[in-house]
Image 1 (cartoon, one colour):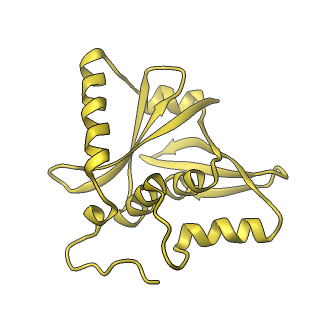
Image 2 (image 1 turned 120 degrees about the horizontal axis):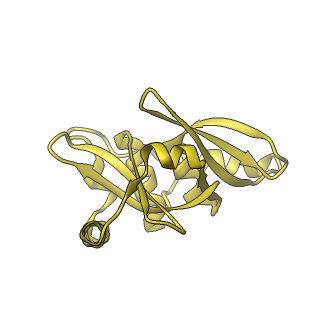
Length: 162
């Protein structure tokens, strides 16, 4: 298993589909994962340290895990089946829970859990980066510094309920 870092979320043009971009910590591969707008917002909130007045779904799940005396320690990206990423939440008592990868990433950011991927997943979907691509990553990071979670709300969509 290889450790991954979350670079952030962005909107892919022209489809306006959000993606979360992960990077292999000790390597040069990037993993783009297309996600929903709600998950993009949840990930952006966690990265920006936004604390809503009332818990959103991912915050609630973190609270539930803590209330039952457990801790999320690892998010494991296990496979990509028919273009869909599959992840597992691993708790401190070795309990494993199947999860959508986007939800797992949102939880990992809230708990400090490590995100890892199998070598098979990285071999299948990892994109090697070159110097030119590193420039793109720098531009992406600059974009992340300027983007806000509200940028991921669909037109006419209400903000998260409190």
